[in-house]
Length: 241
Image (cartoon, rainbow, N blue to C red):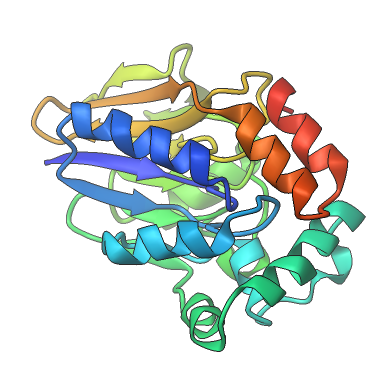
């Protein structure tokens, strides 16, 4: 099975379309999405429509839940909060209901998928420290857990009881090891690289690779500005931060 794991689309239609086109060339058999279809970007409705039309299993992100009323955005920064309220006005009641029913954790025979951490997934913790990684490793009943939320791609491996970061974003899975893989962000990267990020996982080759693809950033920025969303949400797309 060749998986394409996406995360944090955040209403960026141009980035999503570019990633899906790239994935077609990689012969992806199954897509998964690690949360936050909406928020920040100017095309939440269109991105949600694509995810649903393709039948992509997706878990809830904090913006998905905030837009659908499952999470109070009072602790969001002002830009994020404004985007939540704007996004609510763009979606139908049925679409908001869909977001409200997204599960926090997805499992199949090959992997686990969640937005932030397996520990208290409903609180959407950012996995910034190895202690948080260890908490998720302790809750894993599969060898692989794919996450998003930080918008920065990363692979953490646990071997012989010790957690350590991978030096590369292109790895071969080792027997007896567990992995937490942050797929980065399709629609709003924050690792200093503005290209859209996504992850390829091949179960037969036992390989994982975080890939990047260029997209029409200027068009995505223009849409944000034309929608009256905060200008900083447009600017940050060009700097990847």
